[in-house]
Image 1 (cartoon, rainbow, N blue to C red):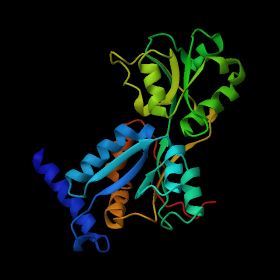
Image 2 (image 1 turned 180 degrees about the horizontal axis):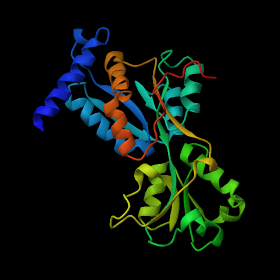
Image 3 (image 1 turned 90 degrees about the horizontal axis):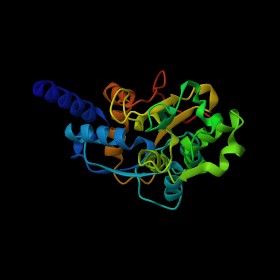
Length: 266
């Protein structure tokens, strides 16, 4: 097993060395702004990248909207891992990204979850039945998963009726905590955050059909003010590779058919 890990590390170092200018200097650190839904996955990816000698990855988490605002006001991030495509595209249009660097790294999946076994039945019927006191969602104005949750409720004709029961999290991670702590009986969260089925804290869930909300295309982009572009480019190259894609899928995300840059997409 250790030999296999050493071989994988050697392969990554070889790939990093193939990047223009990377072999000429030791890898530096890279500051990455990460959407809150991707916390656990990003930590795993960063640890594996660092273990293979790719350089230190410093992660900062928040809602996509708040991170976008920080970047617009000069926050010194090198890479932005958003939970949507809109904010990276806006940064691109503002000239704050490296041309051609934007791509979709994951497809988010929305789930209605409760720690209470049996509360959520197939089809999310509990929403119409109203057998709960509080429903948690992320802020639709700043969090893509919150916008997706609102789209689902509007599609079901329940947005206005359930508005008085909504508990709004600043980001999807806080929304998850509302449900996990019992402050809300159920909530719309990222599938990646929910405990696996058949575990003690699995509770009950409804995997929301993708047809009920706009696709959650989570995009990454290299920022123009990146202090150490070699390491940042190397991390993004790793993110697009097969090893990282396996990790992303294992954490409950969908994957684009092929990882491609989206800089020319309107």
